[in-house]
Image 1 (cartoon, rainbow, N blue to C red):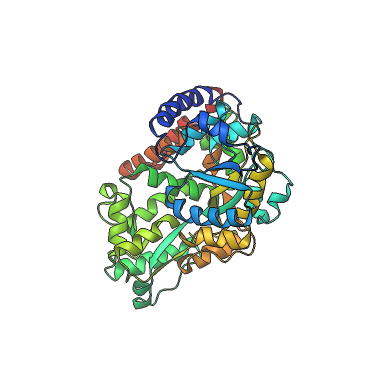
Image 2 (cartoon, rainbow, N blue to C red):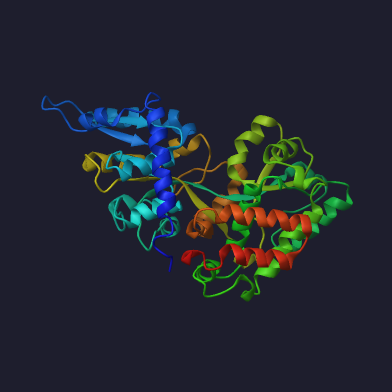
Length: 428
């Protein structure tokens, strides 16, 4: 089991930072705590009850305002004030820790600090709550924290392999369904003088995303095994699945561009959009930017293949989820707003801008470019991001260690470095 106190110092630092951040952004749509405290209760003259919706995605402000207007028209006794600020996760942590929690908020169930606060009882437990009735069962399961649900998952994020459909068609290539077929496809492209993959290996964060995705997808029971390693009960080198996992990471680089270590995310995005490579692995968040870079590009995504097609699944993280603080004001009105935001019609409106897959049942969402990924999600063939269980800083260390392996090509040393990163971490 995870050691309980490993994030105390990190939480204190976050609270300190967040207090300074909150003080600096009080004018950007945020009210000061004193005003909020006086506005959350209905006035004796029958004025509407005011609830604050603290939501963390700046790109969603406009569509949320549209939905708030619709909600208020149907519920004239409730006034919803949207609040979106810089550094929202830090600000949320500070406000909940100082008993100034917003009535309704978005957060991420995989976030370690949120998980800690939920376990401390600072967030309403929604397990088996009617608010969860519309949630896809598989998504409800991967959103759980110690077996409990604390948020209603609305929108989801995943990753996959972008591919240039025109290049595939010109070379008579089919979407690979196994890792062996992926390598075979890369070899055919390379023989035709086409760069099979682009990698943005200059950015260790991008490498980390790939590593976390592939660990969760291909190494059996990797979460429980890493938990044992972090509790000092096992070593990375004890698990025979890690070496082929690392070798596969390295093998793919043989089919990438020459300067993969000098290529950043923005460079890879631009070059994929301009047709300089057949494939590029990253998250669905790049779709909008690719279209802006080249509206004429004919592209889509496919799930990263596994050795056995029967094992195919995709990593899912909750991109938007809504919850209620345990000590929040006006919880009846807050629940009514969450119920509104999680209906099929309103989720389709909310997700329509970005085209992300839905955590809610029967929602028509997801851009056509990600239809194969959306189908996996609908079929429940998903797994959570395994780094949600890691102490802060480990994910960056993993990305940097993998980056070093790409430079020195030493798989055995890489496994030893991973062991140093993970071993006994919960007891340090």
